[in-house]
Length: 460
Image (cartoon, rainbow, N blue to C red; front, top):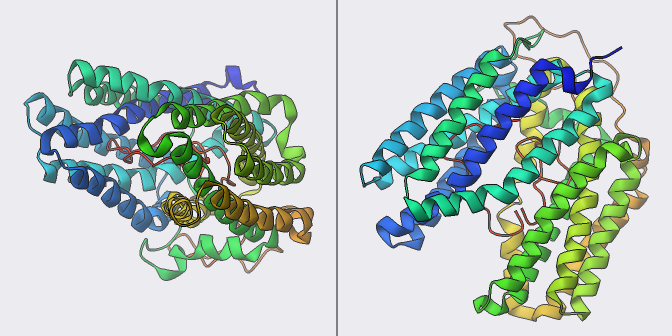
């Protein structure tokens, strides 16, 4: 009989490692743009940090997945932790000394983004080795619940600390990363691919994960329609709601209430998931989530109420979080161990491409058409995606691995694209460092995304 998760020492260490790392990163995500604004008075420079970080993530995601399939994963995580500690230490010391040069801020933000691109796929490979398949759904739910909770309290704590002294959030992040590093160092489990990936810059290696995602009709449909289409449209929906109920920027209460409800819905879904066995009902959950988003857009087109908008968005987020947990746990179970890094990175890469454009589209529609028509157009896009998810035969068939291909090459050879499972975090799914792929609507974000962690690894 499998050891319960509560008694699984290595899982507890990974859970605590993520708690410390995510809490620190959430505090600094709020404090970093505030620091830049305070020092330079330039919103453009504050925005530049976020843009540079996002570009660094997109550029290094696929090579990071290859690295996770080349190097023993716990060792790789420890190296990333050390690099992150060095970067955050430099930033913390500079802020305590009263001046953080823009060049240093950009360097730290970029280093954190690059290290996170390597750390995340390695963490998922290690999680797969630590948790048995029959407990993967429960483990994923616990990770999501932890991250959703931290995302509710982290920015509040970070803002409060910044109000006392601008260096305190970064000091707290340093302490969190230090504790996270200790937890990872105490993990006993090792996870190394049986057949190591080839060169990090090899075209075959960089496209191996993308090739597998395209191979399986189920993964291809869910990632493209639910992961990209729904995530993009729901991002536009929640941003439109944020703008409308904030009265064009004159009041933040209505829009803030909507975003708070989205975060609360993510937490509720993570807490509810273990009771629903989402991996057994994943298609039904995906379909219900899609049509719930359509209903929300339709209601908001005719009823201008922040209370109604917040509650409906919370329901959508709750459902999508449960669906995402089921989808992620199923895919982690069927993922071939030697390619988990590359496919996870490929799924995250594809879903991350749409993140900046949902709010942009929502803003453009709102400006050109007004609130009612903007919600109507977004609802139509959501309805098309929902119809595809409901009727597509590939979604009904589920994630059936393709027949085994040719024998795998030796450890020192490049591995051609082949069977591997994607881990797209189907949007509008709950976003977190715990799960790759599309971020949760309104959170990895329907509201404007915070600056990526300057600290580096987003932990499990």
